Length: 235
Length: 268
Image (cartoon, rainbow over the protein chains, first blue to last red):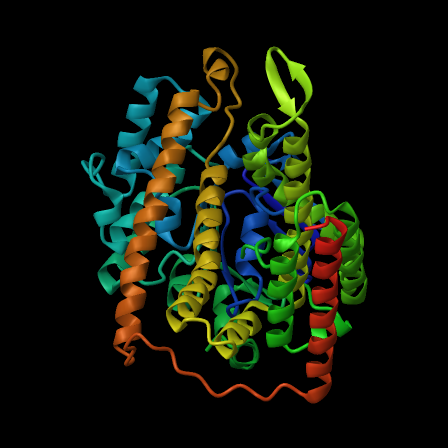
């Protein structure tokens, strides 16, 4: 049951009436790594924000890591699902890298020794050892991205959800990030426009368009279907 | 993922919405000026002004209850006039704990409260029935100083960006505010200490401030690189149709009458 993402017929519209998700069903098994692709405005980010209850569906059910996403479960859900936002500047709101990475564990009420140990481990996992006292404001985008991932790894989530992790990265930082994602064991849903990365990292790809899932299958098949790619503006 | 709550504009198919924004802006300012000039204690004239206001709300199709609810915003500001109750002098209405409550002070306080409340309703109808870009055009058309008009415009543009940024930061914080499955000593400190949370919030406010300053610089550079020289140029505005001038004239007459009634009734 754990490590799983189960979405059943999710419908969501924004307060201005704009319908962002028009019935989305998606099941991802534990340990599976899935790419989520689609044009800007297709509903990818909206879908992602449902996975830890920041947005709630108008109708339909969201279950992650075996937990129903309800008000009561919100704290547990947010510990189980690590969400990495697209813009690292939004994710990094504390004065130093350490403060940012330590936010989750301190919030959970862990003792200080464990917090320090976990922060060191998370920074090591993303190859940012020793960056704790640095001011996140002054890091490069690639470094900020790594720290942003560390801020969720430190909570030891079962599921990782990333929104366009390679956007704005130079080739070397992008390569480093792909290696990092490849070695992480969590269930993963990654929204991206980076189709070569999807081909390299993910066996399964889900295509969204206008708030719907329009294709779901083997990455190799989807990315070689030129008619489909053209139709949904992906080439 | 955008901030939706700031924009007061509500598109409707009403006569008020269809008025030229310049006419609306002039009449709204006229109304607020007229209400401000009414002497204190002119209760009859206040009732007339409120009746006129209700008529405008009904015409605007915005919903009387909705506008009245929003106008509750005026209440905290009214408190600034509260000391008048004690300081106005004149015959005392009552004495509480040795402090005299002046009768004329109470009358003036209630007058100020009613007047600001009615004025705010007009401002709400103006902002709800006119989109902000139209309001800016109206200000330009009425020859407001251009620097103010462009400051208002930039403020409006980036208020949303800033609010969006704050919203995204708060989401990022919420996303990491997890709960432990295990029980024990850790449970008691769940959520962190109050001081720690206050420090986190302070850090967020600080980064928001820094980013706003930096964004301001970037925006200025981007504007300068496209030839900005301190003046925003725009196309000339269309003429106001004659029937709208008629509405303006009638509105003006109503406002003058209202003010006359107020002055005559209070015998100034």
